[in-house]
Amino acid sequence: MTANDVLLQVEHLVKHFPIRRGVIFQKQTGAVHAVDDISFEIQDGETLGLVGESGCGKSTTGRTILQLYRPTSGQVYFQGVDLVSLKGKELRKMRRSMQMIFQDPYASLNPRMTVGEIVGEPLLIHNLGQGKEVQERAEQLLELVGLNPAYSNRFPHEFSGGQRQRIGVARALAVNPSLIVCDEPISALDVSIQAQVVNLLEDLQEELNLTYLFIAHDLSMVRHISHRVAVMYLGVIVELAPRDELYTRPLHPYTQALLSAVPIPDALAEMKRKRIILKGEVPSPVEPPSGCRFRTRCPLALPVCAEVQPEFRQVAAGHFVACHMV
Image (cartoon, rainbow, N blue to C red):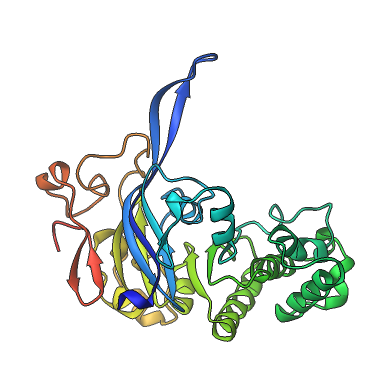
């Protein structure tokens, strides 16, 4: 991977949400460690899958990269520009190249706006068109995502969940972005519709040379769409590797446990396979464990795991892991 290929570079990204007490003075008494010192890169034209349990910080990572949440510390370089240092007009200009597909297609579309207005709104915000040309562009985008352009005068409640998510995809494409953060775009959809939306995203990536950060907890779908996969646990990335390498040779105990829960379509292999059951509950992000975050549930934990935070290091070509046992 060369520096010229890297579209997005995240370095030591931290996002803590303060916990405040008191009616008047609102004194800070703690913080939720949503994202705690993570680093990774995404190449131009690739899809990086980000997986983990609910509440591990995946969505916060995506929103912090796009500066919807301002980071507590760290850098986010997009096309060589540090987004953290930008404000106002400069940041708004960069946002043309970065868009987001939200998780809930029922909550992310304004029910008072027509579909044409929803898809065309980014063009108006970024002064990329007016009047009839915005309407024509919206109709083109609806057709691009597999919807009838004649539906542009309808309202969101007239569409199914899968159709609404296609509208969300069309809105994200309106300003010709380079990077799209897909925040669990299929988790709220019927299983029968999920594959259609993922296939649409793949087709659009090939046609428009898009780069995706694909956030999900469906490991089989992530394997289908991603080039590389990062595994997140309680605010930190514990393993990052090329897709096939991660699924065939997982090194971190948490990754092994996650993959052991994914059903495989071979009855004999499924019977022989050993399922890893993790003990206990995910610790609170307000007071994460010392040392390794995963040690309280890890079947291989040693005393050193409580004392020293494992280094996130490369152990094979493109394969990074944070574990004392590897």
